[in-house]
Image (tube, rainbow, N blue to C red):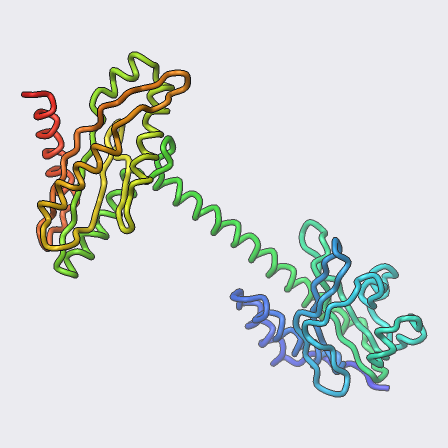
Length: 340
């Protein structure tokens, strides 16, 4: 019969290093399995995850140094495991598995004589898994040594909780960032997102010695739509216009709501005839904004928006100036459509 050993100071330093590494669950668990073997003298140490709903337990990570082999990836029915029996009976350690649980087929097949385990529970009490050590030999594990498996189990649980919290925070941050760049009414990019995209596309165009087409779109008569049909109908109209523009967007194009009844379209230029492309883009956008739009019980027959399209200069990088020029082009188009 052997006995467990005291934990050396060097191992405590390794433990401190381990606890400071929050990168991956495996990066935390494997050094703890090493430490658990060093502390207990047991030949196999392993970490399991438990799916109580499906009734399964899986060995996620294992360290086997001698004859006893606990295979990683092994999945067994939870109802008949030593871990479940230990939790149910409040018996986290035994040096006589055959005497305690002689009817365990898994223990007999593996030849387990000494068994030590600690549940890994999350803050809400949910059983996540177990941290275990086992040996074919009889090994006495002192109460002071068993304190360390409890400590290691708590470290794993804290890490899992911190990772879950980090995932939540990352997801929330992504959603907040998405909301900050999305127009809440139409669901397309807003002005802030437009400026970011325009800055990026101008930089890419300058690096490639290419240019962009920038279209400013103003929905003529939108105030009259609001006055005649109501603001709810006006909002529905804006949503449908945005959807029509977004549906017509080509790969690499950007459509954004600039504000109110104004939209901006960014389109990387292709080919050698930018003037022809500008005219084609203007016709396309006027066509996309024409038609009958359903706003509740009302059908709005709309003749299309005023569209001004400009082409950036090579190496042009001033987003504000680009938008101002496209707005001026739109206003000129609006005057032509008014006949003045």
